Length: 130
Image (cartoon, rainbow, N blue to C red; front, side):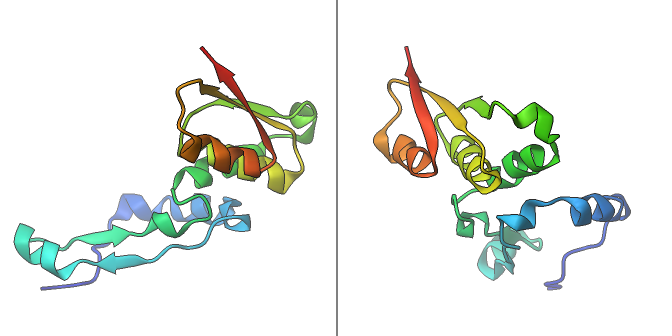
């Protein structure tokens, strides 16, 4: 069985966009690992992108940081705010800290501390709502 990922021409058109993205200021280039047992079971090549190795254990950091990094400083003067009870909140909090911005993360009151504590440790101010 071929363990190399197939090449898709449309995916190649994204290469320049990926190269310009500033996500690697905070993200690692996580490995893409072949899953031989799963591949054999499904009868096709399966590769797993190990995004749980990121600082916030999720791919959500990439989008959060890229958006904040590409936003003009004038629009960020008052900081950032987002509504999330999960990995996106942690991504925004880390991105804001990296850029030296004030961040407010709006979370439901029912958010477990395992979700809210990492965001508050990232210099974000969690704000609970009803």
